[in-house]
Length: 216
Ligand code: HEM
Image (cartoon, rainbow, N blue to C red; front, side, top):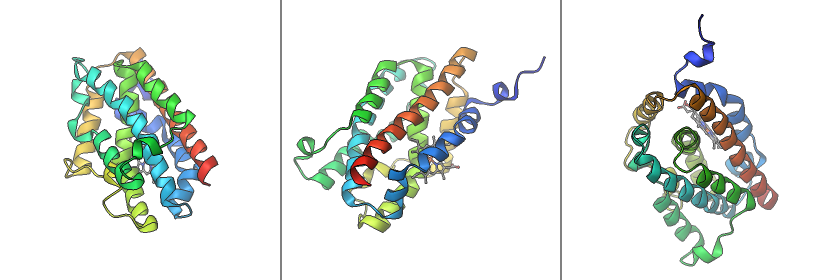
């Protein structure tokens, strides 16, 4: 008996295929559309950066645990680490007292809490890592261009979207997908990864909804 087509797909292709609609929906969130079209202000970009800090603090704490996982170690790449870059952006965008200035939204707390809750669970970590890092290396590069174009930013304030240790993004993304495909997850773990990736998109969208209430 042949397996259903989805189960024959490598994990990277399965995640891409199964989140296509989620991706389009995230992309069409009012906050994202208005931010990308230049309808908002630099404060909206700064607020998004602040939310990202809390999410990546949780994600990169989880990375430390996954690095020790025999199966997962290959999925943790130092060149993806984002927290120091976001901190530099926030210092530029809010000034030296940025830690007192930023405001973390309830949806952001929920997102970070979920990432902390899954801790070093490999299928769940893979879902969150995929959703954020592959997104940053893809759409993130378009966001960077638009932020420059519309909000008078140059490199400063956009370090989050810059990966100095990844000279060829396409080559890196292929290597990342290859690691996903080599994770050696069993059927239940693959299902958990797919489900958690959907959840990750929802958590992102909830942050955009709250940002829209403030900025749109
Ligand atoms: C500003 C809005 C966005 C734009 C313009 C955008 C654009 C893109 C583009 C063009 C790709 C394909 C890149 C390629 O073929 O290599 C992509 C991939 C991806 N994006 Fe987005 N994106 C946006 C928002 C998001 C959001 C909010 C998330 C989730 C938090 C996300 C997650 C992803 C992921 C995970 C991929 C990789 C798909 C794969 O190859 O498996 N994107 N994005």
